[in-house]
Amino acid sequence: MKSTKFTPASNLSKAEIDRKWWEIGDYFRRNSLWLLMYCTGCCAIELPPAMTSAYDMERLGMGPMATPRQADILLVSGYLSLKTLRRLIYTYEQMSEPRYVVALGSCPINGGIYHDSHAVINQLDQYVPVDVYVAGCMPNTEAVMNGFVDLMEQIKNKTATGWLRYKNNNAWFKQNQIDSLGEVEVYDEFHE
Amino acid sequence: MTSSMSNVEFVKDLVNKNFHPLSQEILSPYQISFVVEKDDVHQLLIVLKTAGWIQMSYLSAIDWPLENKFELIYILMNWEKAVHVQIRSKIDRTVPIMNTIIPIFPGAKYYERECHEFFGIAFPGNPDYEKQLILEGWDDIPPLRKDFDPRAYSERKFPQRVYTEDFSVTNNEPSKQAKRAARKQRAESLRGGKK
Image (cartoon, rainbow over all chains, first blue to last red; front, side, top):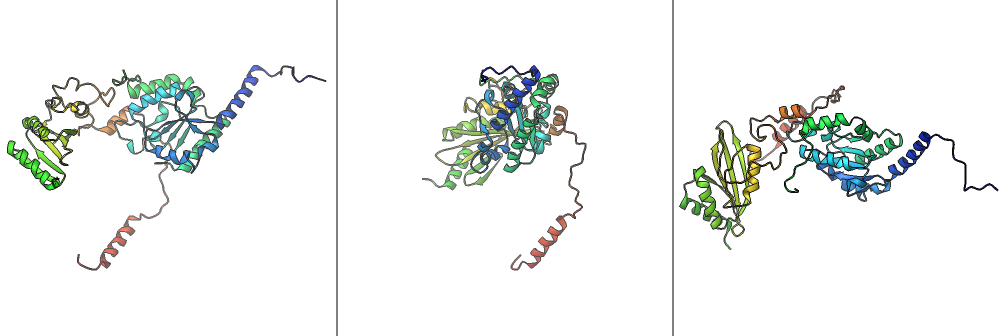
């Protein structure tokens, strides 16, 4: 009887084996997405119904996570001021790859009602790559849940490649950050 | 327990006994406002603090570009006699300087820093009124001055999204405004009783 313990090494190439492992990883990843909620704006009010029994995001395998190091999704809910953008870039760069960004509301898309404010940025995807935008002011909870399902589809179809874009076009993103912020480093007298 | 109106009267008497406010207004049984000269502000704050207005609730400014003035507003609160006291004072706008009130209310330190950041008012006596507090690395005139144009700043600083398609709603429906106005007019005409 042939032993099953020593099956011959497959004659797949290394790239193909890597791809298979990556697909397995994607399967598990998209079924247990952990959110880092960066609740900067009013769209964060849509998250309690999405998390609790009304829409129950846990059934999609999604849950809140406290630290950026262990989170998969950076959830930007609402407008971003310059000051928050600095912290957001810090947070995004702390996350491990692959990382995804979901932006809620119209403010990260084109500024929304803060389009002419001196303190609020107009386009989030100039500074960090965004995978899913959920439009609306504010989007209702069905739309938010739809956005999460869209992200899962994108991970399945390998189109959620924001983190790759950030890696490959890093100079472009960095230049945009410096153009708008002047300096990304945070100098905070209360935490020095 | 004193009634609220007598509390307001108490403040009014207290202030008018010692100072000559330019104008005063009782806004509600719990609020009174005094407009005073710039030089009287500190004395008035000391008198009020001694009388029990120990909480400095707010300090901010209003820009009056046509008069070329900044109006500073100090709001004080007393926990024994529930009256908010507003003290307003106008200072010059081209060289806006106001002495600090830190010796009277130490908590005003951060309000003064905020005021300097958003209006450019100098507060000599406050050791670090020039340090940044809220805006990080600001590179323009203070943003709450009326001559600051936030839209121009936003367009210069932040990339705008360019839409190649027109997403505005074009369903050719007539505006509901005229209909609504006609309905309102009819409702008014049907209303009986005294007008």
